[in-house]
Amino acid sequence: MSTAIVQALLEKTKDFSIEETFTFLANEYKDQVVFSTSFGQEDQVITAIIAKSQAPITIFTLDTGRLFQETYDVFHRTQKKYKLPIKVYFPEAKAVEELLEKKGPNSFFESVENRKECCFIRKVVPLKKALAGNKIWITGLRAEQSENRSDLHLFEYDANFDLVKFNPLLKWTLEEVQKYIDDNNVPQNSLHKKGFISIGCAPCTRAVAPGEDIRAGRWYWEQSHKECGLHGK
Image (cartoon, rainbow, N blue to C red):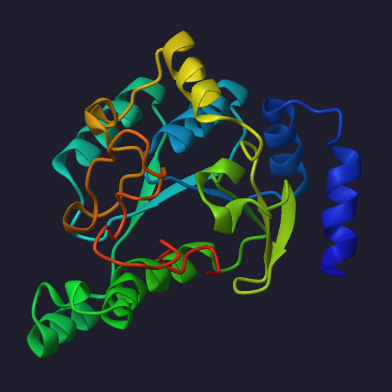
């Protein structure tokens, strides 16, 4: 059934622009279409397109409690510019308290397993809460962001959350994302101009050096797939 839904969506929207697809999805799945933003460049493009389309799509973000101040700054500017409500989901306080009491505030540096535990508590659990009861999840994933994302599809069924994921910027390049931001005066995180391409929690993100992979700045002390579990990796 999930495969049939994905194929039907691909067929129905094959000639649509992103804006038209947002409107179609919002009408087809009333109050069950959500977009998750981390206020990165791709997500800012999608927020701008949602605002332009005026499609009734719920926008939400995950506040892990360890974000950069610059991320909060662009969050604030985005709400002011587009006059869109952005729902915020926090990790469960008890789970964070127990993690810090048991392993301390920097356990994620000690092993991949510890880091994934922190990501699970601060990101995956809140995401499950945000996605519950919805049918379509819009993301800012792009194929060129990492090898793990190169095999993604425009529409795909996400078995972890039992819904269809829509990746409208899948084939966009970083240059195309930046051009849209510049042409449309889209607010962006000031860290992007300081070499931060992919921005997550403050302790877990550094700037990327020239020639390094886009995701090299995420969990920079690890040799891993550079994913946190939000997208099934």
